[in-house]
Image (cartoon, rainbow, N blue to C red; front, side, top):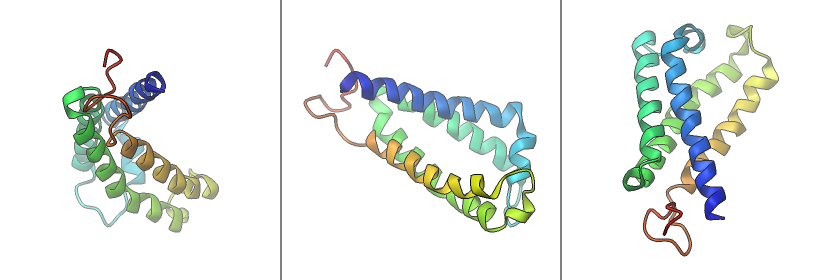
Length: 134
């Protein structure tokens, strides 16, 4: 189980690091989905990209795994209103299917649960116990 948990942690971290990098490679994508009620769209895209990259990398650092996981939970909770806004106001986002916008909400919850998993100690492991040598 510990090997699976570790592999999934690397996958999860890669998801955030690559997603964060994409904020810089393709900011237009993120600008299109920014709700009109948020100010400073481009700076927010860049800041969220930096945060995603940092949290993804910190998740892989044994000393910071739990803190990074809590940071990812906080980030996902913080961006949830954007997903709700998009689903409710789907007419503002014609390039996205209504079903896809609504499916993002349970996906967001699944990602929160996945991040929360890394706040928990490994059964039979030492503190921070994703180290396979533990």
